[in-house]
Structures are given as C-alpha cells and as structure tokens.
Length: 174
Length: 307
Image (cartoon, rainbow over all chains, first blue to last red; front, side, top):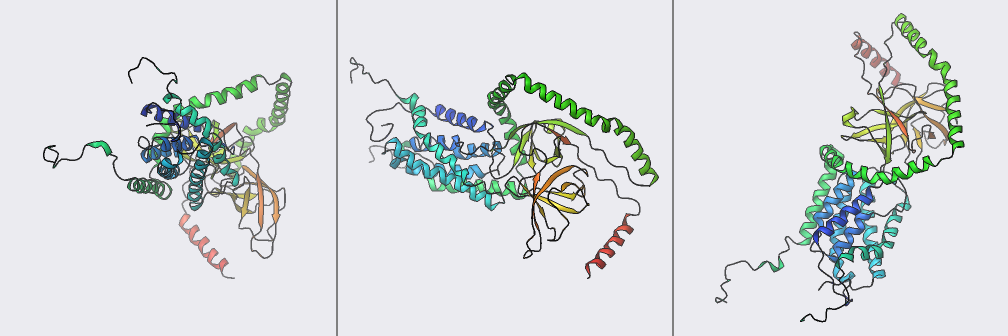
C-alpha cells in the first residue's frame, strides 16, 4: 500500500517511473542555473534523489544516482566522479532508511534528510580537500540547510500526481 | 510439492531485485573512485566530459535564457543619464589612448628596425579573439569561469585570457562550444611575474580566498606595497608585460626565510563581462649556437651555486 507516510490513511496511486526521472531531470536543470558562487543554493538533484530513494527505493537507486552525479560533475566543472560518489552514498543511505523515515511526519522526515544531505556535502568536501582543492568556508554547508527547508514543498509537489480524488464513488461494487 | 510442478525451476520473480544493495554500493563507489583517479591522475576522461558537456549545452542555454533576460531587462531599464555618463567616460578614455594608439604603428615599425639593428629576435605578436563570460562554475572548491568560445572557434587548452585591465587566467579545458578558464585566484594556478618597478622576478600563485600570493621571495626582497606585478613571459605562455596584480600587504617575519606577500588581482577576475583569449605563444626555434650557450650557462650556474 502506497501512502504519503506510513502513518497516513491516505492511499496513493502508484508512482510512474517516467515522472520520477522527469523530476530528476528538472532538478538537474535547476542546478544548471548559473548563480555563480552564491552560498546557500540547494543542491536540487540531491534533494529529489533523496526523496525518491526514500519513497520508491525499488524504482530509483544507485545507478540513477551515479548517472546524475556524473552529469552534475560536468555541469559544475568538478572532478569527474565527485558528485557520483556522494550521490551513490546518499542513495544507499536514503533507501536504507526509507522504512524508518516514512513513519514520521514531514518535519521529522526533514530532520532525517538533513544529516543525509550534510553527509553528501561532507564527502564531496573531503574528496576535494584530499585532491588539492581550496576550503570554501563553512557557508558551503548552508545549502543543505536550505534544501531541508524545501522538504515540505518538494514532498507535496512530487507526490501530487499520485494523489487521487477524496470523494468516493458510491456505486462502485467494492 | 510435485503436484505444483515447480521443482527444479527458479521461483517466480516476485522478489527479483538484482544484486544486494551492499554489492551495488561497492560497485558504484568503485566506479566513481576509478573515474576520479582516471580524471585527476591521467586525464583520460576528457572525451567523456566533452561529450556530456555537448549534450548538456542546449539545456544550459535554455536555463540561462531567463537569467540573461533578467539582466537585459535591467540594462534596458537603466536610466539615460547613466548611459550618457558611461559614454562620456569611454570617449574620454579613448581620447586619452588615442595618442598612444596613433603612434603604435610607428613605434612598432621603429622597434622592429632597432631590434634588427641590434640583431635581436623579433617579438612575437599573439592573435586574439574576444569571448564572453557565460557564468562562474558552481564548483566551490576551485575558481573557474566558462566562456562562450570552444573547440569550434579554435580555442586550445593553455591559452591565456585577459580583460581590458590585465590577466585573468588560463584556458584549462575546452569543450566543443565552450571552454573553462581557471582564474589566477585558483589555488592551483601559478603565473611567473616580475615587479614592474625593478624587474624582480617571482612566481605568483592563487591564495584560495580571492587573493594572490607572491611566493618564494626572501624576507628582505625589494618589494613594496602598491608595486605592480606584470607577466615576465618566462613560461612561454603569457606575453611579457601584461599587468597581473598589485601588492597589498607584506609580512616580513624573520622567523621564516620567505616573505609573505599578498597581492590583489588587477583585472576583474571575479566579475562578468567580455574577455580576450590570446593565441598560444609558439616558442621560437633555438638559435644556431644554442648548445654552446647552454653549456656556458650551466657552468656559470654551477659556479654560482658554490658559495
């Protein structure tokens, strides 16, 4: 039974695979917007990836995380494999925690997502510091915090196609 | 059991999920690690990067449209007075430069003649092409910008990039339609310079915080605040004499053998706008009596090293 959260009584339509990949693509497009070195801009791909790995761990996994990571590496002019590495780890932990996280209401779900996103950023930071990059300052971690604030609108928007009308059809046999 | 007829067959694919998550994790992490090593150590993945960049280009262009549109709307709404003032400034600057520009051809000619008289090699003139900065790359660990000239325009990795004030960096990666320029302020970027006042040569490297650092100069080196640093041209990449940076702070601590000299870039290294991609300098062929010279200079160096 697919529900918005495990404690909810609302039953959702099954998620469509094309919509999942479309949302990931849109997130990638949002990441491509040239905002320069503005701190606190969320990593949309990480957020949407975490969302789908929590809600649909069987449909989206580490393969998609790896591919979108490589695309982000090229788009951000980073080391090839840096985002891929971090996103694969994110997908693994998000899928592993999905059974637990979905028992909580949205605010507490966001609290679970925050350490995942921070961990993703930390992994990337360690990779780049080990390979001779410069330390970007602690404002770098702001983007995880803002991404967490977007958990509520993101879960609403991404689940929108799965909601079915509330009114019941009285003539239906079952 | 035998009645079901399923003995010897695989179970129905209810629980078919492929390899275990831990196996998949290990596989993909190993793959990303391999990609990182191949990219950083061996630079083998440039074709992959170029292909993905070419596929991404139309999407990036589409995403940039609203941002560009906002910028254009801003300039459209800019008041007349500002434009008029800017126009006046530009006119004044052009007039001020006219003197030099008009005599440039004459001076060039004279310089060539004098160099011929003195039996010196001709100075090389590098061709240049204008480019526009598209955006600053989002990678927070390095300082790179992307310009709108690429392989199809004949840009090659290694070309220096300047703006109207001075050097801003060097092309480090070329894609079909765009290229990445590593700025001077990047931690891994270095440029050979000399102090304009006295010709003292040194290496300038990015400090990582938007500033530059003059490296490996002794604590008593003749450098003063507000000294202008220009390229020395020793690397064979940058033309000599291009302004690079201005010294802002000098820290002469006698407990270290080198002075800590902080510099600020002259060119608008971290700004948007138009830049000039200079052609690659081709090293001139060595003169006929090169081997002798090398031998002589080596001997001198060895002597000089013995105190």
